[in-house]
Amino acid sequence: MQTLPADERLIVALDMDGQDALALARELAGVVRWMKIGMTLFYQEGPSIVARVSELGFRVFLDLKLHDIPHQVEGAAHSVAGLGVQMLTVHAAGGAPMIEAAVRGAERGAAEAGVEVPAVVAVTVLTSMSDAALHAVGVDRPAHEQVPLLGRVARAGGAAGVVCSPHEAAAMRELFGEKAYVVTPGVRPAGSETGDQSRVATPAAALSAGASHLVVGRPISAAPAPIDAAKTIITEMEGADSWPNS
Image (tube, rainbow, N blue to C red; front, side, top):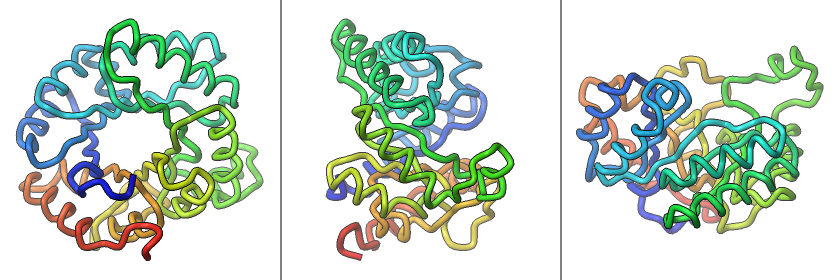
């Protein structure tokens, strides 16, 4: 996974309304390969947004963070896999049986639609959550302990990898091995504002720790020239050491 070119490892988050999302995607076509469609955009625009982004030549990371009883998650994964996405998320906190159901649903939905089976990756601890925030919801373990616990749940459920902050990427890479997806939000180029993220790192640090893919939103989407911002991040990624060479 770490041998992919930098432009295939950068995922740009389309966290905006449909018109602006498509405008940004058109601007970045040919520069990056992945776009993230999260719940705000998906719920606003519906499944058609996946087709419209895919038609521009992008691979789609559908970040809906499915979390429900296994039967419901299997059905949801079946539905969204048929849209032709390449990666989708579930919450690891839903447990191994729920993750297994998501994998089954994704495989069945893709087969019925005749499309590529998407990688099911499990979200561990949101990058917006600090140790204090975890404690406030009854989790007494700090993030660096909670993430590996949920990573083991994800692996037991057959997930293709995890979503975690760059701070836990090394532990997840060791747990899952070199071929797994280790997707890291909370990536900010040096000097960028952290916004609502708590556990962040630079692109180079995330790759060195073992990330396979980096999710970047506002440092690109809110930049005066998004295409230049994306190219700058790709250049930084190209000059970084990738796990396990750091």
